[in-house]
Each structure stands twice: as structure tokens, then as C-alpha cells.
Length: 177
Picture: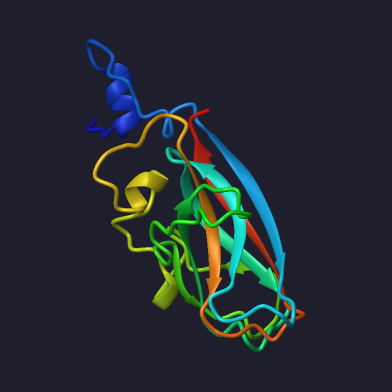
């Protein structure tokens, strides 16, 4: 009888054994939950820092639950260089590579897909060519950064937040740690 092997099994059965990517074999999936609130003083371009991930982490999916904010018409999510967010050291890597154009104007009572891959579709979907890649690869870097490099995942409101909106994000993240 014919059979086909996954890459994991082919590598395991190879002579000599071939190492699998740690994110695919014996890695962990963890959940990161972030909540942000808009206030009346937030302006267009406001940055909401959601979580910090290692450059080698892989975002598998992003889900969102929110109350309505009429000004959250167009929100982007992407990696920024990790910073202290007090001094002016915030450097964008790719502001909308993870989610582009997410509208948070209508309330979502349950967690819904925020347009990330592999579960996303439509205008907010992460391109299939970026799915399952490390954050540094999604960010378009040519080579892996130094070990220990981290990125902050940030939502930027392109519209002018009205205030009073709350958004909760759940990230499913694969890590080799």
C-alpha cells in the first residue's frame, strides 16, 4: 500500500535523522491576550501596544472581541521594534503586515477572526505566503536578527478614535521555547 509522510515524519525516519524546525516539532502554542481602551484624547495615528513577541515566534491566528468605537474605522496591526514606549524610540517595522484595515466600529460580542492566517479571509487576511513564518520573516527582514530580538505587536488607529471603545485581542503564537 502506498503512503505519504509529513515533513515531520520524513525527517524523523531519515538516515541520518534530519532536524525538524522546533516550531513544528515539540514546540508550544501559547495564548497572548491583550486589551486596549480608546479614550476621547486619542487621535488619528494613535498606537496601542498589544504584546511583545520574540523574533522567532510565529503568529498562527489573531482573534478580536470589541465594543464599538465610531472612530476605529481603519486599524492596522504589525510589528514595531521593541521599545519602552516612554521615550521616542518607537520604530515601525511593518505597520499593517498582520492586519490591514480592521474596522472596530461595530461591537463583536464573541471572539472573531481578526483577519489573520490561516483562519482569515478577505481584505484583512495575512497573505498566505506569510502564514506560519517567524515574525522577522513576516516583517520582511532579509536575515534572522540576533537571538533574543523582540518585536512589539502594535495596533495603529488610522481613524480618529471617539473614545470609550474596548478591544480584546487573542493571539495564538507558536514558539520553540
